[in-house]
Length: 441
Image 1 (tube, rainbow, N blue to C red):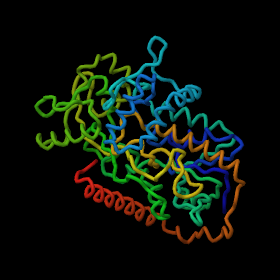
Image 2 (spheres, rainbow, N blue to C red; image 1 turned 90 degrees about the vertical axis):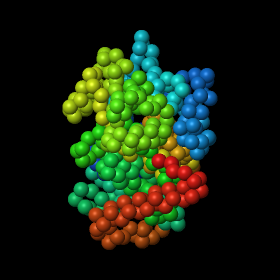
Image 3 (cartoon, rainbow, N blue to C red; image 1 turned 45 degrees about the horizontal axis):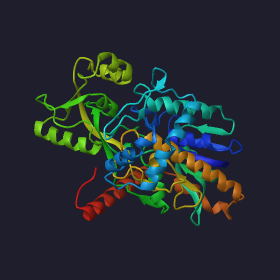
Image 4 (cartoon, rainbow, N blue to C red; image 1 turned 45 degrees about the vertical axis):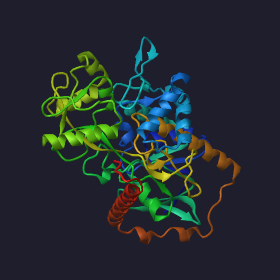
């Protein structure tokens, strides 16, 4: 059994869905995800999405992003992201996305690493609001089909040209899905870690496939640890306590209930301070207090955090909560240019799977959703233009590109992929440390 489509997109997070929506409706678009469509990390994003309010803030926003990224960022990518932010917000508003307003005007908050308030938000579930509305729009489009519980296990390629993907469903059925263009938007690598804020099924599939087919990668040693996840002795995904809580005035305390760090420093700096403090205290956590935030503001701005903490036995309006750093975001990935193009023809990469250099060595808070949407849209526009200019071609000897026998043991393939990605991250980490003589988390 074989399938054909014009464009196959791997992933139903913000990047994948936005890319699908920006493509011409004349294109048949097939979107696949290895879990349920709503189970992407984009849905989990709490804080918000950055936007350039005025030209007066451009230099500061650019500097904040570069500083957080230890100046390892690609300046052209950063400029493109910032300059495109207003247009992206307008598109989101057109899709029905609702952001907090005060006196009828959009409200802005500030998070760690930002010198000014420039973040739009929807309570503490901004990712859910944005990605949920994008999913609803995609489901209404006749040209877009979404297949859940369908994972990408390989690509179909020849002479460094991608012709689609190989998929596996819940029943283990292997199917070649031929496509004129392929877009990887398959998320991060949190599933490779014991403690992570990510969904467990996000295991760097796109990175593994890229490694197998010699598609260029970039900065895969840059893995971000979020400073504040809710401490728990229970196994499983860690609940993230948003950066915006500290942006609104929450403070960090050690075991003696003493403040020990500026909470609005970049994430990696706060993370290292917390890890040092835990070692000094001999505790597996530090305390986060919202005592300096008005109770009504806590309940209105952070209802999801309040609810989840209550489930764990903590009332954030009355007491501190224990927090610990956890793996959160992948700044590296498949090397991509400003249009999302990779080193393999007809293969694009967007979102957390990709690396265009925007984030550098450490992502600035609330840049992830914006970066995903900006470059997903650019990829869609480039893809559509290329498709219009170059007639669709099918490879000669198509049968030779797909061998079902290669995929008879999916679980073994999964284990090999995890090992492959881990080894590459560790290899590049050691290489980076040798070159720079220091450790970047």
